[in-house]
Image 1 (tube, rainbow, N blue to C red):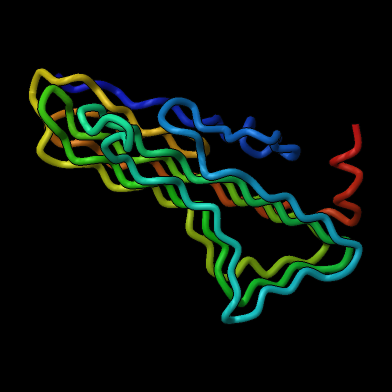
Image 2: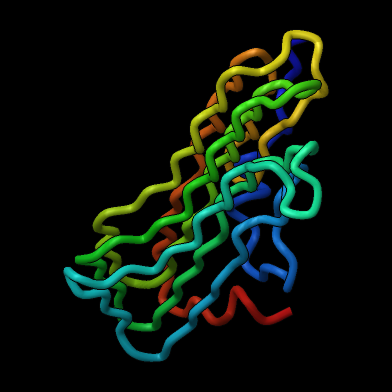
Amino acid sequence: MDETGNPGLTTLAARSLLKPVDVSYALGGMAGAGSIALIATGSIVITSNGSISSPGMSGSPWANNPNFLASASAGGIVILGSRTSISNAGSLIATGGNGANGIPDYNAGGGGGGGIIHLLGPSIVSGTTDVSGGSGGMKGTASGFPVFGGACGGSGGRSGETGSPGGVGYVFRTIVAEPASLFVP
């Protein structure tokens, strides 16, 4: 059995997502990586040894019952907005979790889709960003139960004898003088 993974958000939906709620945006799979939104009146500076990270969880057998597989979750959402500038010399990360290896009666898990990074301000240096999807699991049972990867910006990986990787998420740079106005209803 070779199943299609969970679909990620469209480019428009992902770009429009400026107010993440308290729960994740994982579309299927385990709870997602979570989100952070930071809006500043001054500059946002991430130094060369600094990072902001919201990676998805890797799939694995359930802790309470190892006869069941939990799906890989999607990467999270990182939103940074500044009235003056954003300068990233470090890393911004919202990667999907890796799919679980198959167990009896289960396909290998698909990787979680990559997350979303959105930078808003009049001056932006993106620096290093990573919204890659997680790798697919291995050693699934051909007729086993599917374990799709969670989706966010990127689609979740499909499940099968070998799970497919999750899709790449989104990185957006929006040049705007007053980012806070985009967050007010």
